[in-house]
Image 1: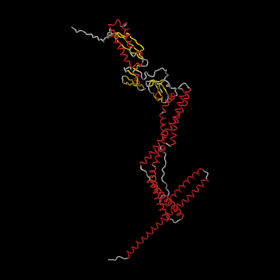
Image 2: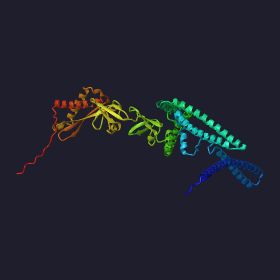
Image 3: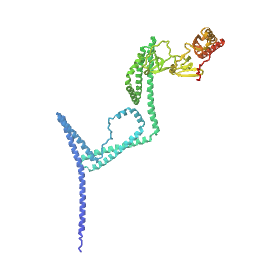
Image 4: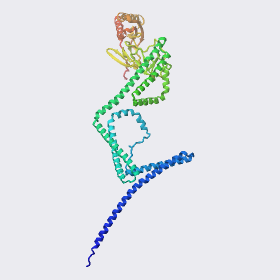
Length: 556
């Protein structure tokens, strides 16, 4: 068996060592290439930057001396392209030096876009400002937290930039490159320190705000006190000032009206109506202006906008009713179909137009109370002149009436709505128009007449129209004279009335003044009593009602 040569393992070991040293040398050469590549890149970028800046200066000089417009436009385009390249080269230098970390950065800015919702927000801005003031602490806390998050991110980026700049600075050999990187390092270090200081201040502010945070009920109380109460208070102040201006205009308008009434015998004149219309217009204008000026002085834009919207809506709604307003204006000037001081029939009752205005007052002297009616409701009615002796209602309080349905009594109350009658302890109530529909017979105003029919038997037929008639009349006259109604009796008449089926009838007609109208039925009973007494005295027969029955005999 042959022996393995001892030098073979030695040669193999030496070969491995050579290979290891060769690999280490290649790695060192690669690192040197990287360093040269980084430096060469900065050198190349620096060289390119200088060339482009020199080219920029040359283009600017050519642009100043060039007169041709086409050439000027080409030079401007070339100059803009060179400036873009310069900006890009400088950004590449910063990125290579910092290792890609951002050295210059600003908080993100949201671009504003046109939006109608923004315009709507401007309308509600005053109210939102007040709510924003109340909720300022929670919003500040949220804002501080967002800023702290941003500056923490910036601190991390700037730390990375400083680290990369310090590492790359050690790899540079050229002074010009080192100087530029050192400037960037100084900027990055300064910005990092600023970020750290900003973070410290923001964190302290956040701690103070959180320690001073109020309970939710106090926030709600502030909202109610500073928003709702103030808003309502300013609204009522504006309303009160407007009402005061309205009253002042109204009071001053009475001065020329009183002068006109003093110098004129007529109470209703055209000039007075002109003053009233002008007063209405001026009072509305001044009242509205006062309302808006007060709200403007308080800065209540929300109430201002809402009020303007309401007025605009009312004006739009009124555009179709303009002709009606012209008719009403003509009526207010006392030139329409109804006029102040004349008589009008409204809801079935006569009224005097006591005051013609936006709310017209109707007055009836016989009724308790008056009506205040909107002008729009009666503008199409017609009025007329009236005589002073015309009645305004068939009855007055205290009059005794006899209704068509048989109800009798004296008037206790009469208003535009109801009429009350009382008799025998009972009260009868009617609507005023229903009362008129029952055609009341007034016994008190002009007096009344009692009619009574009394019949005697046919056996007295021969004397019924002669001696018996005179005797009967004298007996009734004596009966009235002997009663308490003698002084109120104005007429007495007894006449033969009718030859009925079972009797010959007399008709008694006795008239009295209205003072004894309530004793109407007592007078009727008095006449019946006197008739019976005279019949008994003279033996006159008072017949019964007779019924004739025809009986047909049975057939045999």
